[in-house]
Image (cartoon, rainbow, N blue to C red):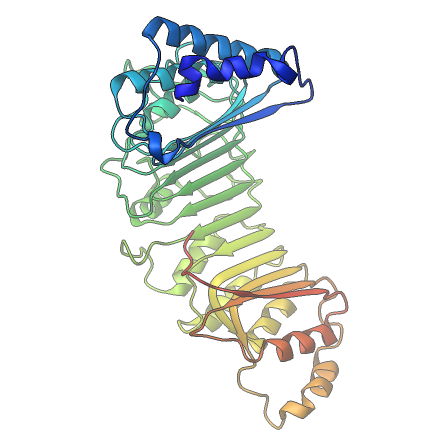
Length: 428
């Protein structure tokens, strides 16, 4: 950063091989600020007026070198030295001016002590915002609200508890609607709990939303994120915390008449952090399946096979439109997998935690299994192609190869299987 403020970087880009050089095909630039260790405590810059001039001149040079620049990505290393007020102002000025060059921006910061003071008022008409916020999401929210009429993709990752309500209403009470937004991602640190969940009734803030991701607690007390997009919402990924489940039931969010296009659902719980809103796995699975009657892709975290799993299999088998089924926390035996494959004629992909042979059929030993499979399940599912399962040191899948080979005998298009090592517990 000191090289930018002193003008050294500008001189480098204006002399020698870079003098007059332009890269017309460059559409994206990434700026990563990682200061050398020996400069972390000795940050020296030029005078204030000279610094401002050098920063503006550098941004202008970047614009000249990349005239078709469309995306700017700024990443700040967590050990950066931007601590003093003056250095924060310099860095904020640089980032603010860089953002004005593009319509798509990414901003990832891990500064712990002082938030940036980005000059955002002139940054508008963005189409893509992706921000990781360590302290507060206020800047990301302001950027989004100022570009509400043009924004297409918005992703905000928050490391501290924050109020996201500013996304739809400013401090003066003015609403912001996002007619072009098709992808919204809101991610909270999984151990954070929301202090409040505001309610905004009557306004369809996201009428064209197609893909919605909420990793963490649902941030509103009503159907703010779902209102008005029943005809467009196709993909949903979210945690099912107790208040969110109660809200869904109160506002009838997933009634068949509201979500006509919902095709893919990914859900999970945070059982290690908050109580589950479901008494059994059957109730959990039924709630998820009721979200969309014509699902083609279903991902459910947290359906253990040892808790009333047979009724869960029956519920899944009733949704014959499922093509991709992922149960990352579910260990499954070969015979349970066969039940699913047989009852889901369109199924092509199955992902589970681990696999075992399970109890053998009466009168059948291991040597007789290939013949038994061919005579009992011949050409059972012509569409099924992939089975991917994971294991850890606690649950090694010793029968994996046997199960895969047996499945290949009866599924003529089965062409891929993967055994992946599971290092950590899963959560959405």
